[in-house]
Amino acid sequence: SSDADFNASQRKLIWQLGWYADPVFFGDYPQIMKDYVGDRLPTFTQQQKQDLKGSHDFFGLNHYTTAWVKDDQAAANATVPDWNTDQRTNVNAYNQYNGTVIGTPCDSPWLFVVPWG
Image 1: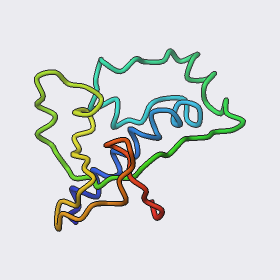
Image 2: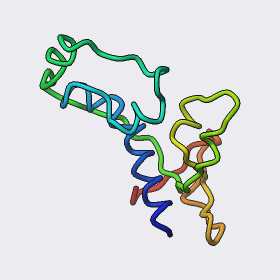
Image 3: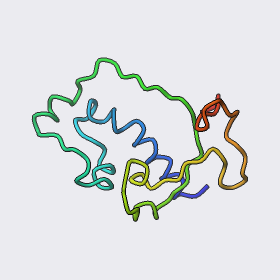
């Protein structure tokens, strides 16, 4: 793997977790989301940020599957930017280096059993 792919995996985590968690833990969206999404990402007022920060008493996140993540900076040039292109990642069930599948396929095409992830 490359540094770019590692960074892409971290961005994927930010979009999957930080989007929800950062506002209630820190009072705002992750900076990289604000940088990459720009004015399409809603903003919080200062009062909302204060109200949100630390407002959690429990945080739970459903995790359904795991995938291989690869850097895709070209996605930033999408004609119609969206949640997927904003991350500048390429997500696939097949390893980009050797083609192996990440886990056992399930009935849904996006879902794989991946006990280690």
